[in-house]
Amino acid sequence: MSNMFNKCVSLTELNISKINTNNVTNMNSMLYKCKSLKELNLNNFNTNKVTRMEYMLYKCESLKELNLIILILIM
Image 1: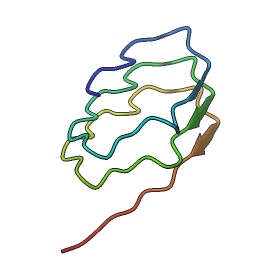
Image 2 (image 1 turned 30 degrees about the vertical axis):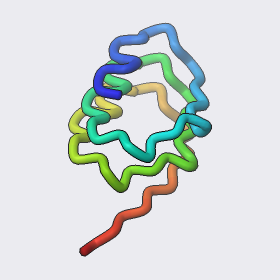
Image 3 (image 1 turned 135 degrees about the horizontal axis):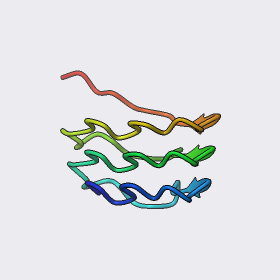
Image 4 (image 1 turned 120 degrees about the vertical axis):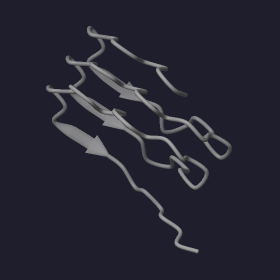
């Protein structure tokens, strides 16, 4: 999922809560510079295998609502 929506500057709303992320390891720069994004629903995102999330929401300056539940497992 790295760079998946990178620089989607006109995107204002995104609901990706139904995407199966069980085997995703890289979300680096996924929403990088989505500067018009106001709402983002990431509920049900499984980040257990993700090792890279750098700049995932970098420069999402208009983001007013973020629905996010992160499960962190410490072994």
